[in-house]
Length: 278
Image 1 (spheres, rainbow, N blue to C red):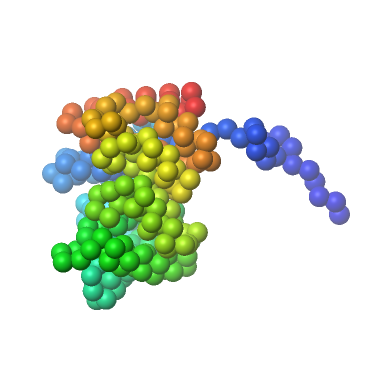
Image 2 (image 1 turned 180 degrees about the vertical axis):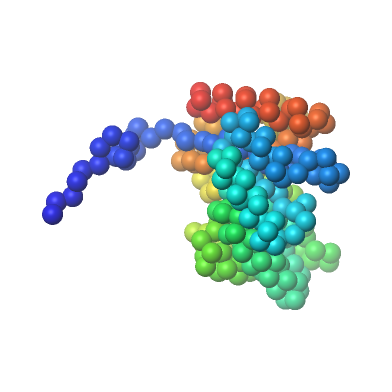
């Protein structure tokens, strides 16, 4: 029996005709103070995502009361009813640990969170490289981090969940440092959680370096460029991501001083327009 040719929307686009495909999302960390004070819940964030036209939520897990099925399944059900994806779970795991026992503990923590992410329906967990431990060199810290990350990747493959290493200070302050860990892990299940606002300077060059290995993007309203903080050029950033073939979520992470309950919906509107133009 001959194969039926794909037509219309089912047919893959030729490489030269591929278009950017970005999905707006909300990072729960934007509401860190409200979550800490009990003024908002994760359910509120899911509702905000649905109301503003965001497609997903990057669920920073720090303020979950527990990881029992009852807690996770309630959020999963609500997300489904709202047609919002809980696609990522941010956890506190830090890969650079100076002793075997501490590295074992980080691997165990990642293993447990992989199970929680799977029960939530998420496709990735977000982790950190960590700081240089006291008395160690950066070279040692990076070596320990790569060793731990490889072991975590071995766990992730059994759950079908990506590990996303965020550029977030310490041994992941720069793009080069972050890529050293990701490339060192040498796993298709490890990528970069590209936070465009975390680079201390020369942001656009570093965004461009990380974009080929990005499996998630935290989009921010400000970046640091030429030694100063300035408004982020979202069109420029989306253009870079497109050139490198990124197709996925742009999770708005708000860290300015204004009330995020008012600021985030407005910024999601701007982000949707930037995506439309891209």
